[in-house]
Length: 269
Ligand code: HEM
View 1 (cartoon, rainbow, N blue to C red):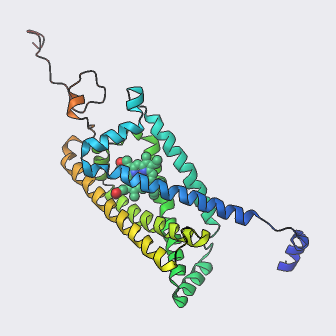
View 2 (cartoon, protein in one colour; view 1 turned 120 degrees about the horizontal axis):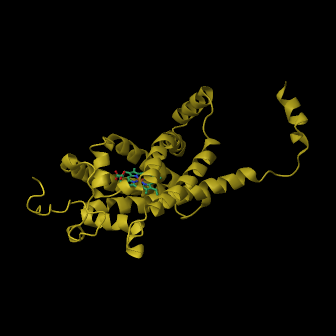
View 3 (tube, protein in one colour; view 1 turned 90 degrees about the vertical axis):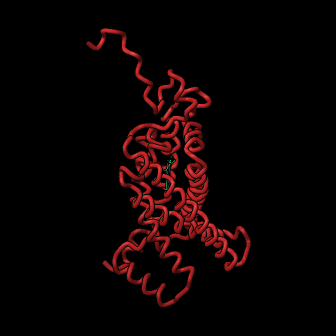
């Protein structure tokens, strides 16, 4: 059936009112992207607390588990935050799919155009599509782990995951993808919505500076978890507990097994 006939038969030819949905969906995509980018900044600093030592990271983990409010860990609180981020992530990805090339022909066309034009912003857009595609898989897997096993987050738990579970190549790839994707995304937001109102060259410098900063911070953080995981490999699964808490016998999360009691005489005979 010819294209014109379809347009006429679906009534699109007579439409006079402007369709505002593409614009609304664009605002939603920008909003969810901004939320995720700001979340990532916070996330990178929280996770990087391991650079200050095991105890600072443990304190932050316990804070999110509500330990200092309720007096014990409520892992479901972490799962709730993860669920919220996951919903925004899925919405953002769903909205982004509208702009992905949907077949090989389209992909070839956009690649040929971006190579021929050598227009940096177009090239950045293509990179955002590639890294966004990678994040579909990597971020989903990461969010699933955080949602289902929030109790495994911690200096030893995270270190074990990186080293003994062998996930460091996964995290390295995700780190590279998310920093490129987030940096380009924020730059595009600034260009699109005009805030901050600065020349593109300045915005681009800021973008690369932020990407480099978070990438270096992320690499140092990854290295710190790998080191802890390596040193902890013989005690895989054991939880970290600061010395002052491990000393309290009633603490349920203690990492160090209580010293064996002297057996009453005759008990083991
Ligand atoms: C509320 C949701 C999230 C929580 C609770 C969370 C938690 C964590 C934790 C605890 C780590 C340390 C390693 C580990 O224990 O596995 C980590 C690492 C990481 N997460 Fe997340 N994460 C969340 C969402 C995300 C999202 C949406 C992304 C984006 C793709 C992301 C990207 C990363 C990256 C790249 C690392 C490695 C950091 C580094 O190597 O420095 N996370 N996350």
